[in-house]
Image: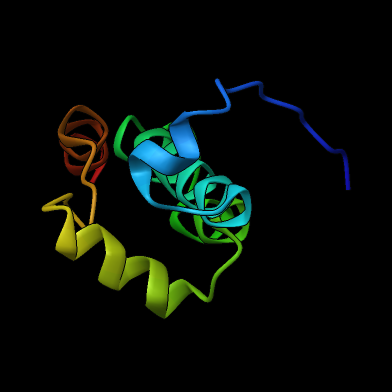
Length: 83
């Protein structure tokens, strides 16, 4: 696994009342949710990025009011025309 270092001001942890480990987890989850919402990654890959089971990731999507099932309507229309 590759490590990524992000620098935050030292005061951010006190402001958020979170440890560096907690902030790290929240940043991973936020990135995974955003990338999934934008269709950059699949649900399974996003759960992997977030470091959680897929079911737990689905719960997080629902809690953030992000569509759990994404439909590409343009692609669906194209497939229906082929039928």
